[in-house]
Image: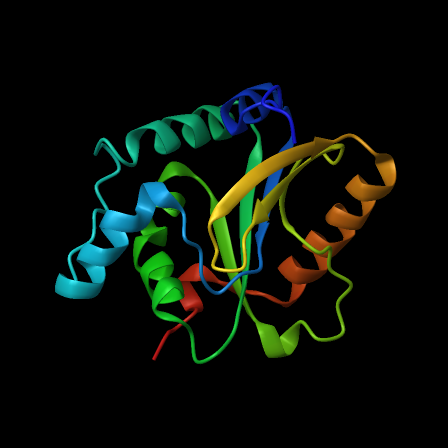
Length: 175
């Protein structure tokens, strides 16, 4: 995992058709979200302003891609009952959809018969995989990019299967 790996922005800006993201963890310990997550846990307050400092770069990146005709989709496999972190993600997903992402949720019990890769990933134009590597407690360890056709096919097939079984964000209710 070298530091010369392309950034998510570079990959998103260079894709022409599709950018799909599969998340399979119930907890992420991403440092950039730590304060926001802690505030949400303590107060219920959450930044869902697409023009805020925290969201604007992402909203701009996704919006540019969608404007170019790129289909940006995100699927999340989650255990139920959901973790506090998944509740936090669900509450902020309105910003993702505002930017132009389509988002679906798949309860983990519905994923048992699906063939899934071992790591979260982004797949760009069905050919470039950007693996996300996380520690056991959810901290981001790094990224790795692959153009291996077999890995891209695995990820494309896995994402399609998850997407087919998943529930659109607007219909997924968390109790």
